[in-house]
Length: 504
View: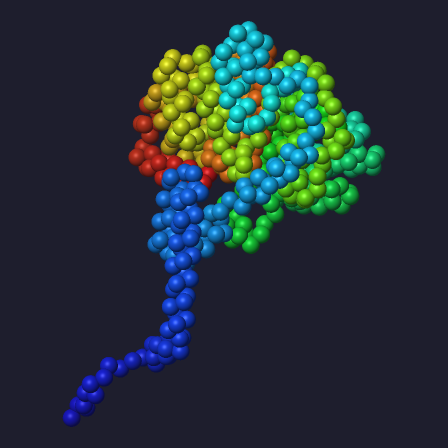
């Protein structure tokens, strides 16, 4: 006989052990755990629906939380909640209680119209930016453009050498190369003279060179700190870090330097670096320097809890020139979307021309619509970007998005691949210039801490328009036909890369 059926299904030993283990978990504990997961998911989903300003972000988070409640809720807790914004609001309130009186040169927006010869458009932009920044527009400034590290670094080092009271310096990248070490030596010498020195470097940007320059600075006794150093959540998800992309140096509270340039020898073309880059920095003097110092002081207090609101950091500033200017802080805190509003206001007020130079051009739809509306309205809209970017994925995404502006009359110019153009300026008509650290991409406009300066100055605008003209003369024009006639594989690659735009 072949054996008898027992009437029971055989169970593998491992499966039986697993089922036995599950039987050991009290049903009440399983029910309680499930309830915790459901409640946590519900709270996270409600929070995302209420506090995420962008609909796409809110929908994405709610979908993840519903589909994978435990993992989605944990992810949202770790990287979805903007705790920086909450802390920044508290610091801003404390700062307002400690404010020194406003410097001389404070102008009403209507006064800009008179100074610029009756330009109502300039007055409109000035009024809008004042409302979104809550900062006054200041006259009596002098702004000096500095081309590349060849001009900027010696000017900065000379200013450090002449410092008598204080030096504040913040930057995204501070390499420990030959030029970085010159800055370390100069800062160390200033400290030895009794100058108060504070240096703030972004924690991610500090990783670009070895040894990290923070060690060299601290080894010389300089008070240097990292902005948002890695913690548990940022170690797990480093791409979601909110970085300090600002580049600011203020000496004795009265001479400022800012723009788009990091501290690295690649920007000194006279050194014939292996990876050359060109960029633009600005030396600023006059009342607006206080705005630069305020922004540094806020970042420093955010990082170290040390307040720098003393007279050695904020001396009384006298008018020294004719530029009307204002510092514009932008970031994922209580300054969220400040620069986006500024750009939209300036684009809407332009009447003749819009000139943009940026290494990364991935604007969101409102800015794309504003540029297209200007071009359709008959304005000359010129956008200068590198032929080949230093970030391949971003370069592909740019090629996937650029047709959106080419179709409506904007002109796109591709600057030579080398040296890589890292400049960031915008010029509207013949009176308004914006310079600073912000790129035209979501990371700069939404996720990073940035600093820019707006200037109402016809002479500066003329010089910047000439600079843009020189860049265009060395560039080639990209046409819609060229972009659309590429092979299917290239267009698919660029289209897929464009889907990652919110995270680039």
